[in-house]
Amino acid sequence: MKVSVLGAGSWGTALAVLLSENGHDVTIWSVDQREVAMIDEKREQVEKLPGVRIPDRIAVTNDLESSIIGRKMLVLAVPSIFVRSTAKSMAPYVEDGQIIVNVAKGIEEATLYNMTDVIEDEIKNARVGVLSGPSHAEEVGRKVPTTIVAGAHDKETAEIIQDTFMNPYFRVYTSPDMVGIELGAALKNVIALAAGMVDGLGYGDNTKAALITRGIAEITRLGVAMGGRPETFGGLSGIGDLIVTCTSKHSRNHNAGYLIGQGKTYQEAMDEVKMVVEGVYSAKAALALAKKYQVSVPITEQVNKVLFEDAPVREAAGNLLMRDRTSESAWE
View 1: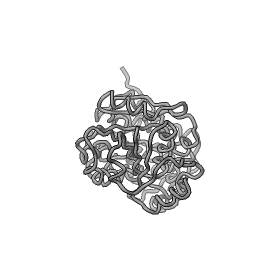
View 2 (view 1 turned 180 degrees about the horizontal axis):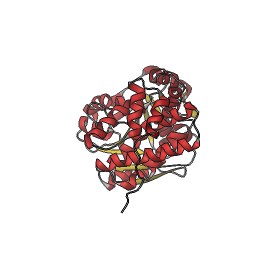
View 3 (view 1 turned 45 degrees about the horizontal axis):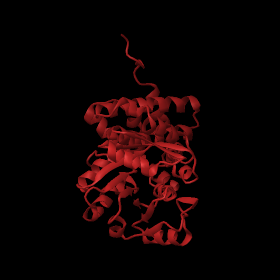
View 4 (view 1 turned 90 degrees about the horizontal axis):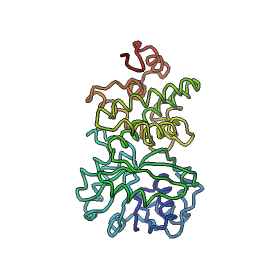
């Protein structure tokens, strides 16, 4: 299959290498000519995925039109804040029935759309799906065993995505619950910021476990209110992605949260991490969705206060612990 990966960051690069190893004819597109030249010369994404060789058979270009025309599948791997602008640029070249696989994780603040909604808003004639789950690029690039979930509006599209990506170290499941998959993917980044803050404060494993557990509870409440399936949030794109993003050294959201917990502003933390921290951009949108659907999201509320209202992190943690008493399960 002819596949283009649009976006040459760490995740796009890792997926391009995987797809090429699966026997597909792969092109990487980047809007940045400097990045294209660097990858073409060194055959490595030196800045964002060092140590993973990009095979010579993978073409690299900044010509968007040639990256789209004649391709069976387009993998949209730009950061979530650039999904709409990239989709708008893609639209004139996308052919009827081309498959677009979104691998960005986020919620658009202005519209409260998930990323596939944004793509479908700009591109009317494609078959749009999503690929998500606990999958750090650094590990996929090293062929570390990974499992992930592909979602689409129809089973055929989901299974084409599954067959295209799946190999002995990259197992792909399918699901019809695109809403749940994308909400889990976006909201776990907000919880991961909080998990990093917990570590930055020097708290322990008890605190982290509580945060992850109560984090998936509020993600599930909101997701189900929006039409997602409860089982999705207990799966790969829910608790699976939440665990890996809250605990891994590869997690930019956790790492940014850690720096914030140590006293840095979110902008200073993002500058130090040197990659897009999706949770910062999703936090306001997540809170707006919770208000729209009248769902309690206390962790997300406190993360927003720390990020955008200069609330001290230790005070935010105390606010969570001292909320009104409640029960974990309903009494008969």
